[in-house]
Image (tube, rainbow, N blue to C red; front, side):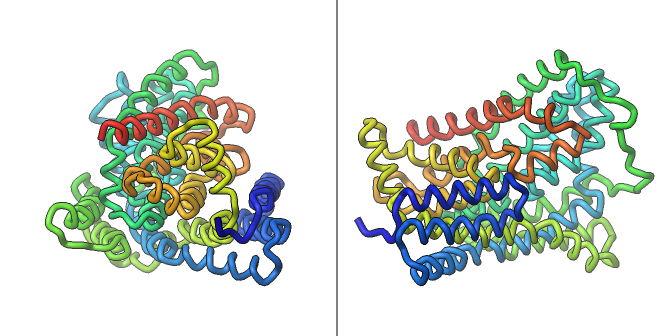
Length: 419
């Protein structure tokens, strides 16, 4: 076994990063500091530690570029009102009697077409709260419906976590998105069931102050709203359908441009692009910080020790895929960071063990949605704030979110086993 750092050093570095994040130190800096301390304590020496951190960050650049260009699509969907129109249409078609299902499906679709999961929740929240108030639903049930729908959509989307996993395993992005389609549907069903029960039983009702209006903003028609996402889906589908490879680096901004043109907002293209960049710059910087700790973990004895532990427990090698996704996402409180670290660290090990790259990437990706919304991450606070929920009330939803993520993970494993 050839490694530069000890397992304890890597774990200590990760623990320090988590503590710093919880203490509200900027997440990217927390990860960098954790990586530096972990490398030094792990016995690598200053030069080796810094070189490993730099190479780890460098390995993230292809993902960072794709994520930055995806901001054009995200900015276009949000600022043109396309995302809100898609959500509104879905809710209207399904009606108030199916309010929870409508809210979940709307959030799932918004996230699945490329909008970040926290932004998807924030986008749907005003409509969801209005529908929830009319239907007499609780705030907890409405928020869980959005979060669960977002989790389901996230594992079949061209979002940063999917891009990172596909890059690490060298698999086609569209193929990875399609691989988790069945797990996503199961997660959606479980979301609707749990959120419906919670929406009726929980006592935190939606008040007048919680309901926001669109402020008279004129939304595009539905066909103009879906034009951009449809173009992205078609372009990404060309590779499996026709053998024509269109990289997400091209497909995502093209979809954004189509959305801007279809909604007749071309005069605002520059401002929409700037808005989109503001939404992805945070995760882009986070990925660079993530790369430093991922580099240390990848160059440590951790993966060998985990493999040895699994072998001692008589567990099959493929269990490492979902387990690593679960643990790394919990450690970073981020689907993107968790999927990235787990993929970057364990891809060679899983492939060498005979687990197909596409299946391993899908299981890691699904696993990263189980306990990714812990309080030391931004998703926890962004989603709670979207419905004016206190931290104490927001904490109560974590077990339900974990159940939804675990559903998609278990189904992803089953799909691998029977596939």
